[in-house]
Amino acid sequence: MHRVKNPPLHFVEVNIAEIEFDARSRDDIPAVLKGLQYIYTFDAARKKVFSTLAATLGPSVSTEMDRPGMALWEIFVLATLKLGLNCDFD
Image (cartoon, rainbow, N blue to C red; front, side, top):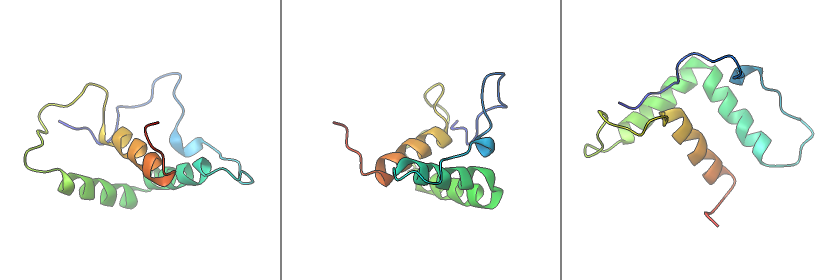
């Protein structure tokens, strides 16, 4: 089954809410990451995002089996960065 959120932090991991971004940066990545940080830290926003993601999973998608280590949060972050930065696979 797809997990929405990973288990509690391990010793070397950092809480997402504690990460600070350079406000003067002109790069696009900090702006996208700030938005993701907001979604992750506020329960109402996170619940709405993941309920929308769950609704978009088609009936042919099995929620009983998933790839080890891939939670919905990681999939959401990678997809957001790809779309938000207009990245391609090259």
